[in-house]
Length: 169
Image (tube, rainbow, N blue to C red; front, side, top):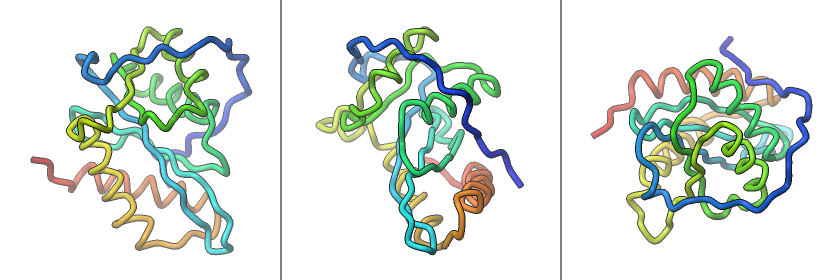
């Protein structure tokens, strides 16, 4: 049940220096990308990735894999582009440096600004942190998963309920 965001063939990415903007420079439709670690019942660790719409607070996607890479993030963004169109800006935490070149290249190709969330200004990351807390408390802590496929299926159901029932001030 639900949509699993699959992996597409590996794309050749041009490695060039990233030039992200401060999140305060982004105006318009904005998304934030976050992630966390989780475990299957067998003890295998995996990474969960989520994309949240800053203006509506809705979770647009949740995916999981054994690693969190630029390619995995780009696959999710490509799927969202088909479903929803593109935002004007995507926010990531400054600690996301391991995939920033690939993500910066994707953003450049699609005319989307890449903004780092300034940890000194807590209000910039408040919406993604609020989602992160709900995701960990209501989903990860309350569930156990046998496989990544089960995680994805249950996360899809939880995401739909979260978007429907979560109240935002």
